[in-house]
Image (cartoon, rainbow, N blue to C red):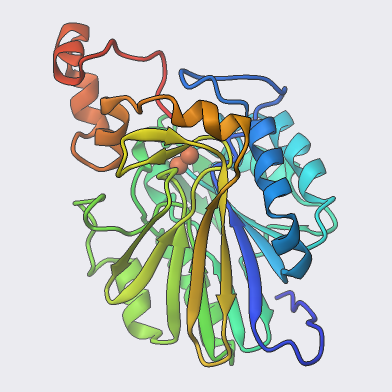
Length: 319
Ligand SMILES: [Fe+2]
Ligand SMILES: [Fe+2]
């Protein structure tokens, strides 16, 4: 497990989380939102420059490529390796396992699941088990519908065992757990607290907080008594309260020696955010992200039913 050296006398661990980068294999605008992943990531990192200079690490919490293109990971790795801090990645439901593993690792860009910084252990957990088949020895094969199937957090048995082994072998006092799909019951009604993730939290009481992405919004909640944070997307985010799109963003964390966790969500000001905030978020998207409608129910609707339910035509492809 990597151990990041820290300046002597610096007692708090500082880190930055980016999420849902949705990079493509070429720059430009994509999707029904007409977002530009390159411009969004650049705006978020520019806004985070001061925080990056003071940070110990940056965590990138999944959906790093939009559809899993190999070239997207290579292009993103070139950006991440230039950052002044080590980067730790974990996969999301949009990530293609083989391309992710082949394209990302660089000096300073890690796929290792854990890093120790002072009294804190940061754990990167793969919660994409619903969209992947474990074919043995920690090797996974993506299912064709992984993007929509793996829409809630699920640990495979080997992943849960791997995480338990790391936790049992570490003498860290505090743990911050990162994953892609956040366990928020109000958004994921099928979430089972007695499942592998809940059991992990019960068995390891020094997991102080969880942070995820996937929802493209700045949210907070709790699962099994543990605080849950959600990072906005660097590509496009959703202001769930205002039912509008929002600009590219990121989260900052301060982890104290006594186990307290402070986190703040940031949206990068500028022309991208101004343009995004001028757009109402489509009803189908906020309903889908908030669990009001399932992807299966949406699929079963005819185009006419979709239009009647959401007041707008069905988009070419979801986020
Ligand atoms: Fe995403
Ligand atoms: Fe996602």
